[in-house]
Length: 286
Length: 345
Image (cartoon, rainbow over all chains, first blue to last red):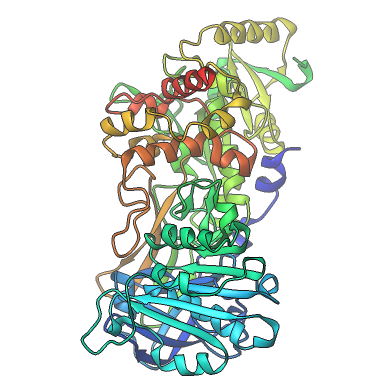
């Protein structure tokens, strides 16, 4: 007996559930966060979808337009609804931006691997987010801030193009109150901007780092990773203690369509969260 | 060769078998199209022509169609119904490399989250393989796919008179006994096939200069080879190689809406890693914008990346990509060049 006889011929595959059927969700609230991003609070009709980890993503779609991979931005442990922050850049995301309270949206997931919170416990964490990278980072930050006693010092460096593009401003006071050391920077300041100007790496030297007990997390635009990694190396944080989340094109979410592949790794299966050390064998990654 | 496994049928019995299958099933077989061998639907035995060299397009389209519906949706009613388009079908004339390719597709679509669209179609497909002979592009001998032991229902070896028949499944045995008369093969018929295989083995114009098991390691060390930029400079990025490859299975998913704007389908269509926007994300960042990098990716998928996951080379040596390439990029020649570079180091 071979694979052909065993797996293929002796099964009734018409009863295998199609991985492409989405779950319906209802838009509970829409908040305009910046000119390009909106925050959607969505209640899925199947509550199993709420069982996710920070770092995972969903395929969010509308019939007639298709689906787009969207990272989870709410903290874990939700019981009724979850949050997606979506930038309008393509066909699907522009259509999603037209959704209002009460509208229907269709979701598959969660997909991919999330952040390993257990491994971060007892450690200092240095979060570095660039641009829309704060969206998946927020899910992780919320998880950590919910349980600050289990972690050491928590620092966030967040860089934006300009002050108007800064996401989640209204939550910063709460994050700081819970113990997050926050440092913001922008590339193009307004005359009223009093904060730091320049790329995120200009702020890394200012953070006190104990490399023996620090975990670094980087999420940002493709160009950012290399430079932040170099700054982390200056701080002697080793590659086994650095985690990144990588963006790629996604179509199926189930490790078949090939779009998300980085060398031999399917991002929708083994990513989007990777340990930097594991990327040494994947030169296409960063 | 174990003679218990072998049966013999005459030319007339073969005609009876094919005619019987046509009566019961949708049958695809090899025909001559524009002067080249091709798979097509056949409705009579006379249309079928068995070829020694591979078809230009592989038979993957019958199991993994170029376009297939995954879901039917209704925008007004907010419903999504899964669609599995599969029917009983027969494919006649697949060669050893093609059947190997099919078993690789089986592993891909059965692994992890199983894909019911492919698997149900595969379960309902009867594969009748036929013996072949290498042309100047074939190199199956070098990648271990010159002969095949599984993945088919019936395999036919053409003799001077009649066919030697191997069955590879219960279904194959059932069809053979129900639709035709066969008898156990005689010793001299088995000897005839063995002699033909010896000739076949000695007739390869194209071979790889390293054993198959060393190829993943050789590719692993080839990332910085000058080969990629050289072929990247001439490649059109047209994706023909993806198209004709029997183990290229990457796809796109698209929505198609009917004119009433209420109903539509979510469809899966073939995509190819050689096409420019394959790895492009929203905001126009392209993770594989250079053709050299796309070629490196495709070749590595065949000889290295998927080997780690499925424990087999994903190049079956059919030579289709080399045969079809508009600028004559030849996968065997490139691999041999990488082998030479590797040996020099």
